[in-house]
Image (cartoon, rainbow, N blue to C red; front, side):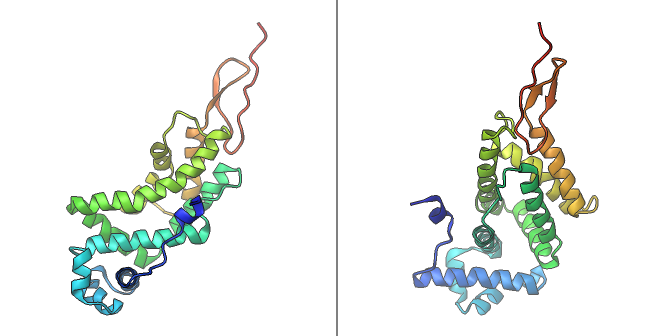
Length: 228
């Protein structure tokens, strides 16, 4: 099985899988239409055309169901847009990604759903673990592929792990979104990417014998020091 087939969302084949997909789609649709308190298991079952018992056999309450729905939506989006772009310019590629994230967080329905899930994850450790496994782990995996290329081409220091690199790009955006500490726009996303790329760039030797970060998006070249 090739990488593309592993990434592609499964097409529901059984009655159980079709019911699950219908429930996930219904949950996302209702979350876009209604305030979070009204997105109940009963409402989701009615929209999906399945019985409440069908939902409760899979999910104990709406929190885990909605986390699954967000993961389902992210998986479709990753296939639709091809994941993280790789043009050879790390800064440009991740600028495009973070601008897209900022745009999504500005959508009122998506903003409200993610804030509600943040609360669910804080008060229910099982939901918190589910968010890490189903939402963040696949996102980190997408970034990790791009980071692997960046390491191979000398744009990221090889000693920096994938999670650390991911957090440098994503954590500032979600911190500002969650606490509303300032404007969350393309200018901020661009600044985050510039700072992260600068922080992750390998150090190279300068003519004076000191160290400097390699320019973002360019393969660093060692500069000869002064002749002995």
